[in-house]
Length: 221
Image (cartoon, rainbow, N blue to C red; front, side, top):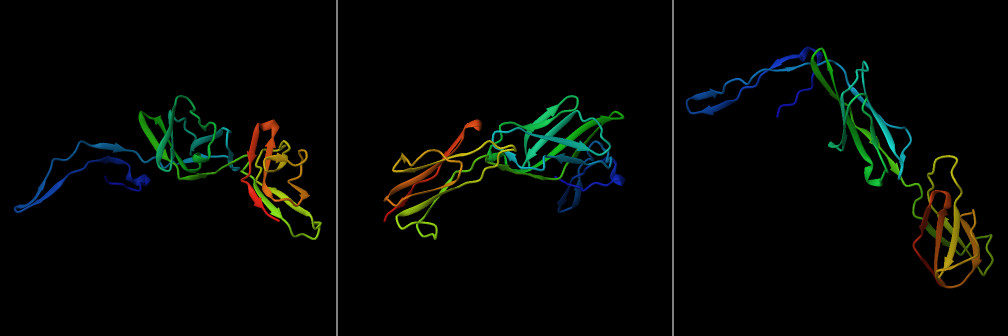
């Protein structure tokens, strides 16, 4: 395979010919039939939203070409592998029900007809980022703090919440040995009496149907 970085002046008919080195000299094959390549000077741009996509959302993209011709086909690539092909009038590209695995480098190819010739251009790579709406919580157990009494510990439930604004509220729950400590709270921390056991926290967003637990943290007096 021969790859060329084309310029406008490179348009024209191309042929290829093979050569074999023998004891009596070079032996050439017949030339191939001509192939016309038209370098139109356009380029494609894969347009993606500036903000990262969120798991479960739909990410809409567009493959734009300079001069705004009307592509009859667009192809979407992820890390160099074709993942989607759309054809017809003004084809659209989208990733439905995003997953963390959808993160990566994307590019697109647009093809259109003009003056009884087919033109095709490919874009540069664009990074597509995907985030969890609610990451798995991490429980922190603090025993030494100026605000704590001698028989208290502070439980803090750390997480990242990436919901679109206005973001629904998070409800935090804290547990010792799988028994809930008090009622739900909008704060990500609570103070409880020091007692040995296995502590954990839960973050819940009822309006989004999200609920995630932390790993358990052992505490011994």
